Image (cartoon, rainbow, N blue to C red; front, side):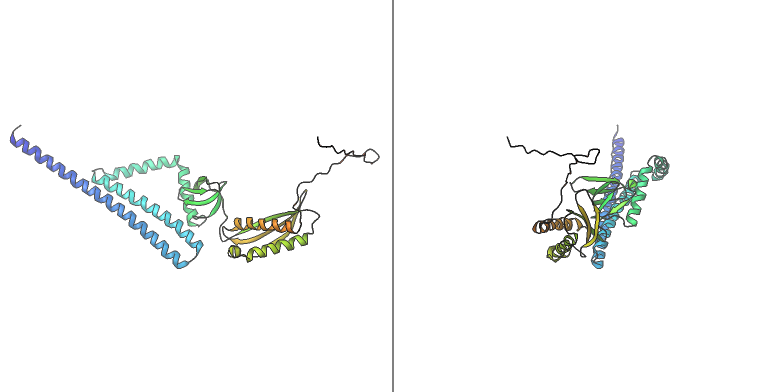
Length: 302
């Protein structure tokens, strides 16, 4: 190899290195710009949410804006990432047009086999659009109950009382039971013995409810006085009185536990019996309609 060949090889190598270096720098610039775009758009969405929430000053509206802001940041990241991948492929010399055409054909084929995934996205879109579920709500979907920790276009993430996390695909959601929308009712079914005066019991129940609402810790959690529907049914050992108390959304369970605690103490103080199962032993009758004697013998302790 003569001197000219060596010079040409070095020149070619320098040229290729220069091309690779320029390509690498452009790719690095694309990645940096994409990262900055994701960060700036995320902060922009977060700032808009905070300003709108502060202006509206509505807890219900704040929940919705938080959910929509999270989904907006997620979609922004996906779109920016896709554009970044296409730009990087272009810098590497890969033609994007055939890939997009092939992706359309593959997407059509995959669509038939991934109908459930498409259904998840469509259902998730309408869940967000119609404001059925928001972050922080207590809901029951597809037989699972819990606090909504995260909602995407594909699934709803719930955490139940035991701390277990449930991931429910949106496509499986046919009915949404939202227990923290607007207000909630603390519903009670109070059982008392048949010998008790029902009017006296109801008066005591209202008194306990008034004392509960007078407590500063529960004054803001309750929205209305105790609403007694009346005697709901006769059980085997008890008369069931059904009532409810309107509470702020999400507070009905705490109010219910505290009211039952106070009512138990009030029943004990006024000697009102909280019934337990009773049993009547029937010895039968003979053909003449007379009941034979039923012998009872007390056994001494050993």
